[in-house]
Amino acid sequence: MERKWFIVDTHQHIQIGSYIYASKPKEPKLNYEQLVAREIERFKNWFEKYDVAHGVVSNISPMVDRVWRSRHGGNEAVAELIKRLKGKVLGQYVPNVFEPPEVVREKMEEAVKVFGFQGVKLHPWVSAFPLNHPMVYPVFDVAAKYQLPVLSHSARSEFCTPMLFMDIAVRYPEVPVIMGHMGKQHLHYDVFPAMRLAENLYLETSGSKLQILLEEAVKEFGAERVIFGTDGPHDLLPAYVVRIEDLNVSEEDKEWILGKSAVKLFNLPEP
Amino acid sequence: MSFYEEGDMFPWNEEKPFILDAHTHVGASYLTCYFTDKRWTAEDLIREMDRCGVDMACVSGGGLPHEIKQMNRQALEAMKRYPDRLMGFVRLSPKFSDVLEDLDYYIRDQGFRGIKVHPNQDGYCLLKEPVLDLIYERAAKYRVPVLIHSGTEPWSVAGQFADQAEAFPEVIFIMAHSGLRNDKHVFESARRVKNLILETSIGGVVSPKALGMDRVVYGSDWPTTSMRSELQEVFDLWDSGHLTEEEARDVLGTSMAKILGIKPRKVVK
Image (cartoon, rainbow over all chains, first blue to last red; front, side, top):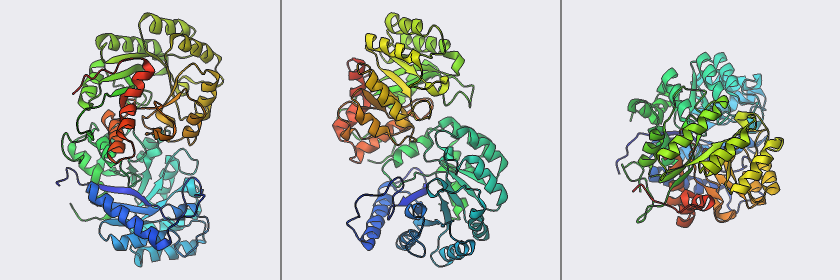
């Protein structure tokens, strides 16, 4: 079936291990290998159903776990997914910023060179650290070295307001810093001053539904600085795409938001 | 079904559901008016409803907080212009001394179908504002629902909705935005009481399964959001089996029609 848009979903999660809001009271009945197989199947089916070109994926559990149970924690499941869905899925490594700086650097180097991760995901709210804290500098040092885009959750949590994105982006101008959710439903007024002060700051569309905010952002900063995401994969993809289709911006801008901006940012093959 | 093909966004095979948007605006909305001077007319709203297949809509005026009188006049004009499609909700603020007179005028004299209050924009807390009690007493008298912005602490969070729903069991409260995806106690609060309805705009569709019949209603908060995208979320949940056909049809319009005491009337094919 011919698709209308070239779509890259830059914000996806596998779900193996700890959950985001509360622990699951029951242990999963599946063992680790079975869980990985389940997630691989889920992703394969989803890509087949919705004909999305690429997904950029991280796992929730390394953000939630304060102490990892293995060397790379929940990232190891993403490494497996990258291997199994080669070319379709890009991995975002979630570092444990509470580890010593040299350990963080060493593990991120491994993540890139051994496992092929192509981006970084941070969740300051869930992990509990300010996005611009010096403990995060080692992460950005390695991101700068390998030109890895860093996607972080943003919201009204004091750990990840849009202005903290601006601060870290100004410190690391060579790192593309992606503001996941664009401040969500409350910090939308912070988005513009932050974007004005850091040219390497990008917006990711999931979690925000304000059409006028996105339209004004495209007008002021260009569609190249906006990338599409779902925080999925889930069955609301059509609604999320419709939201972009309905923006009062040019068709070319919509193409950039839905896929071309991500191609440029993540060095993906041209559609 | 594929959303990539033109005109193929609908999951139903035969009969199109009745669609009633429980939350729209003319003028502007709380979330557009600080970004743009643009204002949306009744014609813009009807055009959008036609495009999206929405038969009827509840409409209130929107804009800056000092513009309340103008907002209500705009909603009245819109309703008079399209009486078969639009039902007025009067925007009330306890900050205005003649708030109860406005309530009587628009509900009793002009036939508005509901009340809209916005604690976040008008600067008061749901459980601390005594004028609200007077508004709710009249809402009970006129048998109209009260649509309230939610998801912004400290003004209007889910627990406060349940507390006031308990205090006024004869009033139907509608939680606009179902907590804006920010409030994690929406479902638990809604489960505490029977007279609290969840409206889906921005916050998404809380599954009606555990709440019971007629507790979740579709709304878009247009022009804040894409009406078509908010509607598509319900279609997606229906299409993927997360909602049964009956649940989807209830959410899309049947439940809100019952709350308003109107007969569902399909206008758009």
